[in-house]
Length: 118
Image (cartoon, rainbow, N blue to C red; front, side, top):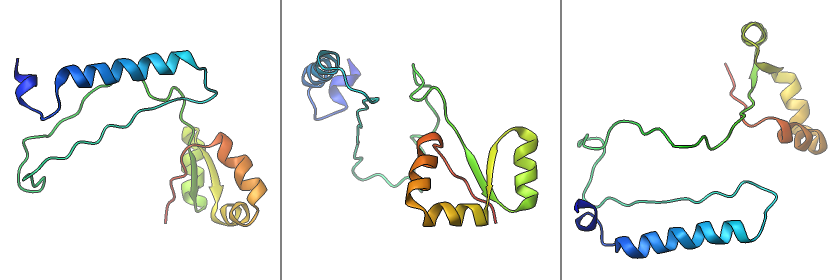
């Protein structure tokens, strides 16, 4: 099996740790989406020179079912956003939200991502 030779981590230890994480996540119900991060270090690898690791992987489940976007831009960009059905804010409105913490928190609960335009 190639997987055993590719890492310094014992495969059985890794699988046992993942099973423990899954077990603990079902024991106590949390009121938020729990996630696990995995960080991998590649020694002696320069991604600008070596393109061995390129491509994309489709995840078996979607990490977030709904993703809301609110564009911050000028009148032209706001009109384009409205035409395709994206929520939008003017730069002045965004500045008002930035100054008012209560309004900022309220807006942040419903919007996940704020791209901006020049």
